[in-house]
Length: 277
Length: 277
Image (cartoon, rainbow over all chains, first blue to last red; front, side, top):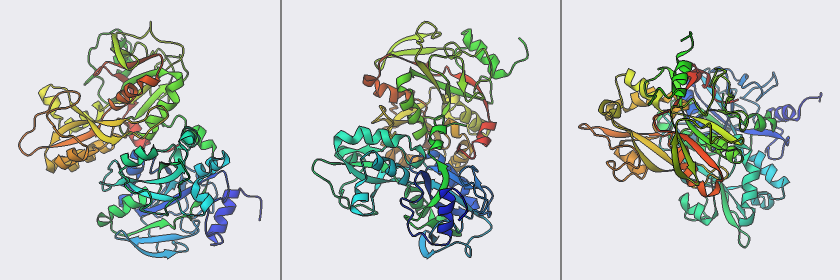
């Protein structure tokens, strides 16, 4: 293999379906969730992301409908050979809001009006928590993080109305919460600091039974630990499902856990300090 | 008066306290609310804006603590003589979350660690609604727009926790709502499209009596009209008040209705289409 960035190398392995799960791959590079929609819904979905940047942080998007290779901003994906239809390890195909099939690539189903969106993923802040000696419980237990439907409304955008924020939950000791908040705060493009914490926080989010997550697996609590909730990248997928009766044409997403390795590194967090154009 | 942009001209009039209300002044230029905080709270407040861009849209901020003249991004304010302490028509001074006094300028109270934030104001989308034949009711009746505390949580950022979104309300006919949504959607830096609408929408926001707004004045409804709610620029001020027990030092805001005329024009709405760095 020639001398290329670890992110590009990882994408090539994904393209060849040689990686099944991208957790821990190419540390330091932000990973992305995928949503692909027909172009006529793209402006509304883009607005949904801009209006709800904590659950739906937009890392990049395809530049021209139907073009699977050019991503803006160009720093997000810097290799010339990029193809959004092949460079995730696995994909899911939806029609009318229903899951149709899993796929290794989208080459046969991609249409000339498809637009792809890359959404930030929590892997990056989980690495930072682990590095600080505060690893997420599901890393230690080998489970899938617990996710819940919350009562935090998604601010509506065009056809995307009536949605709510999905939250992920990691147990921590109350005395660690301020440090957990501080560590994750800077990861603004990957959900940032928690949206709520403690048993009161669970109540405020409308979560009645912490042992019955809506997605993922229940997490074990050690003595005295309380739940800490972050906005979750499953949110935009659920919003698209909820709007499915208004969407004609195929919609694509990544297979959970099978993300895209982008070329964004931690330096974007610094440049984002201003956060305005 | 030499040949200068209408926005700059308006700022000079405000500096001389020759304007008492900026509604309708310098059409086409975005107007801004003000919040000034001691520097040690600036990062948290900045995060609050980035995480809640619909109620707290950040147009610009001072570049260096204590420096009252340089605004970033530089396109926001382009005149060299700018002074954030004088170029709003009127100011309010707060200590410990309590209103202390009104002021014509901040020259005597500004400290070397103060940081100023410019927040988008709904005047610009109201002009667009009026131009489309859908003027807000309070324009016609000469009242102050009705504002309510909603149950939409502000996503927490540092010391700013537990806040909620303030919403403004304008009555419209149900058949006009999609047009109202479309017209205001593009004004992303001035609250964008509504967050809820209809009597169901009021209920979802937790508003029990539409005739008893928490701020401003009640609005009259014509036969068949329903309430339409937008996120409101009073939100960041209330968030700062709510955090007042954690804030040492003076906080400043503009006098309601007495905004800053910025040099941002509608072209920013186009450039914001991407919305990411």
